[in-house]
Image (cartoon, rainbow, N blue to C red; front, side):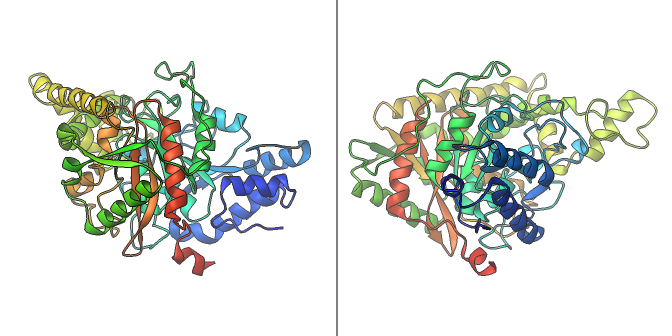
Length: 486
Ligand code: GLN
């Protein structure tokens, strides 16, 4: 049997496999066929690994399977896969084949998940639309004229379009939650340290986290279960205080949800606000208490983030020099300095160069304290404000993105407009907290994401509340445009 992968969840895949209705090979073939059919237009995948995926599936068919074994997954192309091209969306890494698997890839494989391929992204995860990819833009499955969000736009769009039941992305300032919101899927950024960053090509090392995309909150929990926990290759990773639980139930009684009025006053589109307010009503019907809170410094999160993240990026990206990885120019010049310059000038895109220049500037003598130091102090205050808020409330709710998906091309030449996408997500990264985006309705036919933020390592609380709300909201994650396209 060939299953219809559109709207098929990981739990749905498991049920089909468990019942023997489909084999692992048939399941993988169904996804590969749909990718073949749809991805020419969408551009979610930079590369698929069809033969390797088929072989892995065949092994499960031969040897037997259980649980998540045989369920496909898509990987953002910033995660190293041994021997397979990994570019982080950049020309400078074209042809780069890592010598090892990222920690999350090792875990995904150990759980029996089958990587289908690598997904498109903004170059080095810098962006909110996937337009900064060196390999073309990904299109939003809800409306192909729109961006899917970013930087993990390929992963979000792949899950929305039925090109993978699960995907991994990374979130430095919103890159899981914002594309999840714009594509109408669930996306979760775990607590800093909850998931190993080993083998993740670094952007902002104090901010980066890997997390799952899925069609349902339960699926996201299943994926998080696989990837979370200590990895000795990442000294910032820790064992979670309690294992990730797959949520059940629909009760929010005893849960207090805080709504940061000052942050929301910064410019949330009316249609987004309406969908957000409706989901708060659902929360109240399920028994939650909703109260207004203030996060006065969080309104400064965006400028602080756009100093700290580029500062870290400028250091992390110094290693791409034409010697060790990827791009080697035909005419690299006569001296090593010339080679560095030429390689980096031709290998990096405009947004990455902008960040490197900004980051180098704010770290330079005489400016360090004024810019980077001030941003770090703002970061500390934001963290304290969240800590304070969580003494009164269990969760904080905001929209994940101030707007729905915007037209391709609209913000590409206006960095500040692009950065404004991250208004509601970056405070969470600066504070190292977990956050989820789940679809909570449509505005002008495009999905709106509800963000739930919790205290450090409260993933289970977030997942439980998100699952309860998901049931009440009843969002259909299959894009109408995809349904008619077959
Ligand atoms: N949009 C933000 C940026 O461009 C966040 C990116 C991310 O989370 N990787 O930096």
